[in-house]
Amino acid sequence: MSAKFSLLFFLKRRGGYVEGDLPVYLRITVDGKRAELAIQRKCNPEKWNTKKGCMVGTKDSVKEFNSFLLAFQTKVYEIQRSLLMDGNPVDPEIIKRNLTGKDRSEKMFLEVFEEHNENMRKLVGKDYSMATLTKYSTCLKSLTLFVQFHYKTSDINIRLMDFAFLTSLEMYLKTQRGVGHNTAMGYVKKVKKIIHFCVANKWLTSDPFMAYKVSINKTSRTFLSEAEMKSLTNKEFEIQRLAEVRDMFLFSCYTGLAYVDVAKLTKSAIIEDGSATTWIVMDRTKTGVMANIPLLPQAEKIIYKYRDHPKVLVTGKLLPMISNQKVNAYLKEISVLCGITKELSHHCARHTFATTVTLSNGVPIESVSKMLGHSSLKSTQHYAKVLDKKVAKDMQKLSGIL
Image (tube, rainbow, N blue to C red):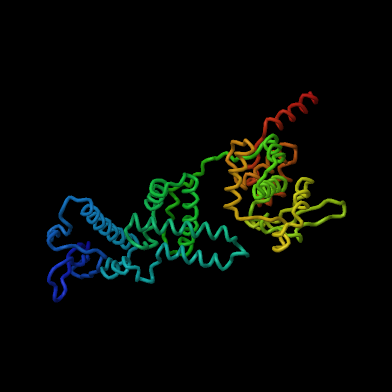
């Protein structure tokens, strides 16, 4: 037998009330049993339609107010549906606890996400890097804003996570936050990890990603050609900071190291083997995979150039690195002065190492992958831009064979 279920928004008068706005309450009734809760909104009785349970008027502020009431009502019906689907009793007090987040037997999405981030924070330097934690923290901030925007509340029950949540999140990120498709998918992939964690713990009975596909658009990676590298190398800079940033950039062009790895590089990472080859041996910050990189003469020359730099002597680092933000800002100045039209960032140096310096000169992709510290060859293939010069060389070899 189906239960009689009704909702009513009303203004609640307190003793001694004379005039002014009154708090709006929601009354949930199931088979005569009631539960009431404040919805954190107020309204003047003169503007309230008692019969319809909403504010009267045509102003935008009135429309926004009534939209909030409708969204709150929709949330109640979603909780009712979830209880019915799980075979749980539809009790007004249970619904109220779900709405207020006070039912500790039920998990709240943002709360679970925050717990995940706290656990990740404890493992920084062991299983995760600080950069990874920062990405998850940024994602949580955007998710908090999304829940406030879309659901008009501070958090939502994990049982309400469904396909509609994912599609609404994607739309919000692209329209309200203005992020690109791949960035939006990056956020969604992090949500996917949390949802799978909830499914594994049986807090969520079904996986909304069964019907949702995370798609990543292919992007072209910026790298410098030999001519552009030559232009950069030969340029004389009057400003010392630009000359130093240029050298730090070139160092990564000849080693393939990311900014974070160059910034932490010390003399202890430089090792000479028995065959007079000098190596950089270090764990990559991002992947934790060991990267073994033979030092090219160009990179050794840069290390030697800065061996007595005041910052190197004080910090004990191999090179006088500044913040990544400043490096990328100065690289924009450098590209203009060198007549390079490509948008430079420090990570462009890593792409340049993979393409112009190694792969286009015949270094096998397996060796490049090892030097880059990739955990799989698939990661390296994203860098494997086959240049026209390499194609021409390969065809010349084929021509000689034929």
